[in-house]
Length: 244
Image (cartoon, rainbow, N blue to C red; front, side):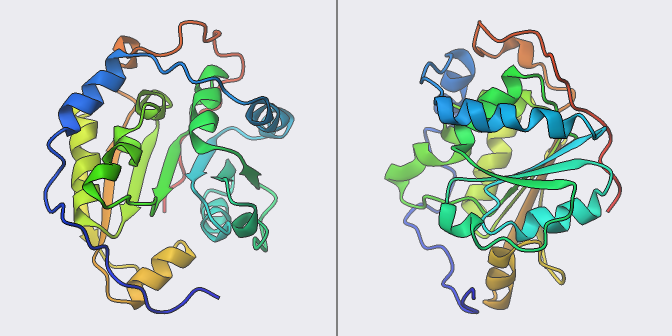
Protein backbone atom coordinates (compact mmCIF):
# COMPACT_ATOMS: atom_id res chain seq x y z
CA UNK A 1 0.00 0.00 0.00
CA UNK A 2 1.06 3.61 -0.56
CA UNK A 3 2.35 5.26 2.62
CA UNK A 4 -0.04 7.86 4.00
CA UNK A 5 2.72 10.38 4.69
CA UNK A 6 5.24 11.93 2.32
CA UNK A 7 7.43 14.98 2.57
CA UNK A 8 6.79 17.99 0.31
CA UNK A 9 9.23 18.63 -2.51
CA UNK A 10 12.31 20.46 -1.28
CA UNK A 11 14.63 22.28 -3.64
CA UNK A 12 17.10 25.14 -3.65
CA UNK A 13 15.24 26.31 -6.76
CA UNK A 14 12.32 28.51 -5.73
CA UNK A 15 11.54 30.26 -9.03
CA UNK A 16 11.35 29.03 -12.66
CA UNK A 17 14.72 27.99 -13.99
CA UNK A 18 16.67 30.77 -15.66
CA UNK A 19 17.33 28.59 -18.72
CA UNK A 20 13.66 27.71 -19.26
CA UNK A 21 12.92 29.94 -22.26
CA UNK A 22 16.21 29.19 -24.03
CA UNK A 23 15.81 25.43 -23.59
CA UNK A 24 12.16 25.36 -24.70
CA UNK A 25 12.88 27.44 -27.81
CA UNK A 26 15.85 25.27 -28.71
CA UNK A 27 13.75 22.11 -28.55
CA UNK A 28 10.99 23.73 -30.62
CA UNK A 29 13.52 24.67 -33.30
CA UNK A 30 15.71 21.53 -33.33
CA UNK A 31 14.41 18.08 -34.31
CA UNK A 32 15.14 15.32 -31.82
CA UNK A 33 17.05 12.52 -33.54
CA UNK A 34 17.29 9.84 -30.85
CA UNK A 35 16.32 6.46 -32.39
CA UNK A 36 13.00 5.01 -31.27
CA UNK A 37 13.23 1.47 -29.94
CA UNK A 38 11.74 -1.45 -31.83
CA UNK A 39 10.05 -2.52 -28.61
CA UNK A 40 8.20 0.79 -28.42
CA UNK A 41 7.13 0.48 -32.06
CA UNK A 42 5.73 -2.99 -31.40
CA UNK A 43 3.85 -1.86 -28.28
CA UNK A 44 2.28 1.15 -29.99
CA UNK A 45 1.34 -0.69 -33.18
CA UNK A 46 -0.23 -3.54 -31.20
CA UNK A 47 -2.84 -1.03 -29.93
CA UNK A 48 -4.12 -0.07 -33.38
CA UNK A 49 -6.74 -2.85 -33.81
CA UNK A 50 -8.16 -2.15 -30.35
CA UNK A 51 -8.28 1.61 -30.90
CA UNK A 52 -10.33 1.16 -34.05
CA UNK A 53 -13.38 0.35 -31.88
CA UNK A 54 -13.46 3.77 -30.20
CA UNK A 55 -14.32 7.28 -31.45
CA UNK A 56 -11.94 9.07 -29.08
CA UNK A 57 -8.66 8.69 -27.22
CA UNK A 58 -7.52 9.72 -23.72
CA UNK A 59 -3.88 9.44 -22.60
CA UNK A 60 -2.74 8.90 -19.00
CA UNK A 61 1.00 9.58 -19.18
CA UNK A 62 3.01 8.08 -16.33
CA UNK A 63 0.04 6.07 -15.03
CA UNK A 64 1.86 4.13 -12.29
CA UNK A 65 -0.37 1.35 -10.98
CA UNK A 66 -3.15 2.24 -13.41
CA UNK A 67 -5.56 3.50 -10.75
CA UNK A 68 -5.87 6.82 -12.57
CA UNK A 69 -6.30 5.03 -15.91
CA UNK A 70 -9.21 3.02 -14.53
CA UNK A 71 -10.85 6.13 -13.09
CA UNK A 72 -10.41 8.06 -16.32
CA UNK A 73 -11.78 5.13 -18.33
CA UNK A 74 -14.94 5.11 -16.23
CA UNK A 75 -15.19 8.89 -16.58
CA UNK A 76 -14.66 8.79 -20.37
CA UNK A 77 -16.61 5.62 -21.00
CA UNK A 78 -16.94 6.02 -24.77
CA UNK A 79 -13.23 6.66 -25.36
CA UNK A 80 -10.16 4.46 -25.43
CA UNK A 81 -7.95 5.27 -22.44
CA UNK A 82 -4.26 4.32 -22.56
CA UNK A 83 -2.09 4.37 -19.46
CA UNK A 84 1.64 4.55 -20.13
CA UNK A 85 4.42 3.75 -17.66
CA UNK A 86 7.89 2.19 -17.87
CA UNK A 87 7.79 0.40 -14.51
CA UNK A 88 6.85 -3.27 -14.72
CA UNK A 89 6.49 -3.33 -10.92
CA UNK A 90 3.93 -0.53 -10.84
CA UNK A 91 1.98 -1.80 -13.82
CA UNK A 92 1.92 -5.29 -12.29
CA UNK A 93 -0.17 -3.92 -9.42
CA UNK A 94 -2.99 -2.79 -11.71
CA UNK A 95 -6.46 -4.06 -10.89
CA UNK A 96 -10.00 -3.59 -12.18
CA UNK A 97 -9.42 -1.99 -15.57
CA UNK A 98 -12.59 -1.34 -17.61
CA UNK A 99 -12.77 -2.76 -21.14
CA UNK A 100 -12.03 0.67 -22.64
CA UNK A 101 -8.66 0.92 -20.86
CA UNK A 102 -5.23 -0.51 -21.68
CA UNK A 103 -1.90 -0.24 -19.87
CA UNK A 104 1.38 -0.34 -21.78
CA UNK A 105 4.95 -0.55 -20.58
CA UNK A 106 7.02 1.72 -22.78
CA UNK A 107 9.31 4.71 -22.61
CA UNK A 108 6.98 7.70 -22.54
CA UNK A 109 9.11 9.87 -24.82
CA UNK A 110 9.11 7.10 -27.46
CA UNK A 111 5.36 6.67 -27.04
CA UNK A 112 4.64 10.36 -27.63
CA UNK A 113 6.76 10.47 -30.79
CA UNK A 114 5.18 7.31 -32.18
CA UNK A 115 1.66 8.46 -31.33
CA UNK A 116 2.31 11.69 -33.23
CA UNK A 117 3.80 9.83 -36.20
CA UNK A 118 0.79 7.51 -36.40
CA UNK A 119 -1.64 10.38 -36.38
CA UNK A 120 -3.20 9.81 -32.98
CA UNK A 121 -4.78 12.96 -31.65
CA UNK A 122 -6.11 12.54 -28.08
CA UNK A 123 -9.07 14.53 -26.91
CA UNK A 124 -7.52 14.75 -23.44
CA UNK A 125 -4.03 14.16 -22.12
CA UNK A 126 -3.23 13.78 -18.41
CA UNK A 127 0.22 14.06 -16.80
CA UNK A 128 -0.35 13.19 -13.17
CA UNK A 129 2.50 13.85 -10.74
CA UNK A 130 5.54 13.33 -12.97
CA UNK A 131 8.92 13.04 -11.29
CA UNK A 132 9.70 16.69 -10.42
CA UNK A 133 13.50 16.32 -10.66
CA UNK A 134 13.77 19.14 -8.10
CA UNK A 135 17.52 19.80 -8.16
CA UNK A 136 18.39 22.73 -10.43
CA UNK A 137 20.91 20.52 -12.23
CA UNK A 138 18.09 18.09 -13.09
CA UNK A 139 16.07 20.77 -14.87
CA UNK A 140 16.45 19.27 -18.35
CA UNK A 141 14.88 16.01 -17.16
CA UNK A 142 11.53 17.74 -16.55
CA UNK A 143 9.09 17.16 -19.41
CA UNK A 144 8.80 20.83 -20.36
CA UNK A 145 12.60 21.01 -20.75
CA UNK A 146 12.93 17.64 -22.52
CA UNK A 147 13.58 17.28 -26.29
CA UNK A 148 10.23 15.47 -26.64
CA UNK A 149 8.32 18.64 -25.66
CA UNK A 150 7.26 19.61 -29.23
CA UNK A 151 5.72 16.16 -29.78
CA UNK A 152 3.76 16.39 -26.57
CA UNK A 153 2.34 19.71 -27.80
CA UNK A 154 1.72 18.49 -31.35
CA UNK A 155 -0.52 15.67 -30.13
CA UNK A 156 -3.10 18.35 -29.36
CA UNK A 157 -6.19 18.01 -27.20
CA UNK A 158 -6.90 19.31 -23.73
CA UNK A 159 -3.82 18.85 -21.53
CA UNK A 160 -3.83 18.66 -17.74
CA UNK A 161 -0.78 18.47 -15.50
CA UNK A 162 -1.11 17.81 -11.79
CA UNK A 163 1.81 18.12 -9.41
CA UNK A 164 2.73 18.94 -5.82
CA UNK A 165 5.53 21.43 -6.49
CA UNK A 166 4.63 25.02 -7.34
CA UNK A 167 7.83 25.60 -9.33
CA UNK A 168 7.10 22.67 -11.65
CA UNK A 169 3.56 23.92 -12.27
CA UNK A 170 4.80 27.45 -13.02
CA UNK A 171 7.53 26.20 -15.33
CA UNK A 172 5.12 23.95 -17.20
CA UNK A 173 2.68 26.82 -17.68
CA UNK A 174 5.44 29.17 -18.83
CA UNK A 175 6.73 26.54 -21.27
CA UNK A 176 3.25 26.28 -22.77
CA UNK A 177 3.05 30.05 -23.18
CA UNK A 178 6.55 30.23 -24.69
CA UNK A 179 5.40 27.57 -27.16
CA UNK A 180 2.44 29.67 -28.29
CA UNK A 181 -0.35 28.22 -26.16
CA UNK A 182 -2.97 30.74 -25.07
CA UNK A 183 -5.26 30.73 -22.02
CA UNK A 184 -3.08 28.54 -19.80
CA UNK A 185 -4.56 28.16 -16.30
CA UNK A 186 -2.65 27.35 -13.10
CA UNK A 187 -4.75 26.54 -10.06
CA UNK A 188 -4.21 25.25 -6.56
CA UNK A 189 -6.82 22.63 -5.76
CA UNK A 190 -7.94 20.01 -3.25
CA UNK A 191 -8.55 16.39 -4.15
CA UNK A 192 -11.63 15.04 -2.33
CA UNK A 193 -11.71 12.18 -4.87
CA UNK A 194 -8.06 11.52 -5.76
CA UNK A 195 -7.37 10.25 -9.27
CA UNK A 196 -4.27 8.29 -8.34
CA UNK A 197 -2.43 6.73 -5.41
CA UNK A 198 0.12 9.55 -5.49
CA UNK A 199 -2.61 12.18 -5.38
CA UNK A 200 -4.24 10.42 -2.44
CA UNK A 201 -0.89 10.23 -0.58
CA UNK A 202 0.01 13.86 -1.24
CA UNK A 203 -3.45 15.10 -0.25
CA UNK A 204 -3.39 13.05 2.96
CA UNK A 205 0.07 14.46 3.73
CA UNK A 206 -1.16 18.04 3.43
CA UNK A 207 0.75 18.98 0.29
CA UNK A 208 -0.42 21.88 -1.85
CA UNK A 209 -1.61 20.43 -5.15
CA UNK A 210 -1.48 22.28 -8.45
CA UNK A 211 -3.26 21.84 -11.76
CA UNK A 212 -2.17 23.32 -15.09
CA UNK A 213 -4.68 23.11 -17.94
CA UNK A 214 -4.65 24.28 -21.55
CA UNK A 215 -6.18 23.52 -24.93
CA UNK A 216 -3.56 22.58 -27.51
CA UNK A 217 -5.94 22.45 -30.46
CA UNK A 218 -5.21 25.97 -31.66
CA UNK A 219 -1.42 25.78 -31.39
CA UNK A 220 0.54 26.21 -34.61
CA UNK A 221 2.73 23.11 -34.37
CA UNK A 222 3.60 23.33 -38.08
CA UNK A 223 6.43 25.64 -37.05
CA UNK A 224 7.94 23.04 -34.71
CA UNK A 225 10.99 21.08 -35.86
CA UNK A 226 9.37 17.64 -35.77
CA UNK A 227 10.65 14.56 -37.61
CA UNK A 228 10.70 15.26 -41.33
CA UNK A 229 9.89 11.64 -42.12
CA UNK A 230 6.60 11.52 -40.22
CA UNK A 231 3.97 9.88 -42.41
CA UNK A 232 0.60 11.40 -43.16
CA UNK A 233 -1.65 10.34 -40.27
CA UNK A 234 -3.08 6.96 -41.17
CA UNK A 235 -5.08 6.35 -38.02
CA UNK A 236 -6.33 9.60 -36.52
CA UNK A 237 -8.09 9.22 -33.20
CA UNK A 238 -10.13 12.20 -32.17
CA UNK A 239 -13.35 13.08 -30.46
CA UNK A 240 -14.56 15.26 -27.64
CA UNK A 241 -13.68 14.35 -24.08
CA UNK A 242 -16.80 13.65 -22.07
CA UNK A 243 -17.75 16.07 -19.28
CA UNK A 244 -16.52 15.39 -15.76
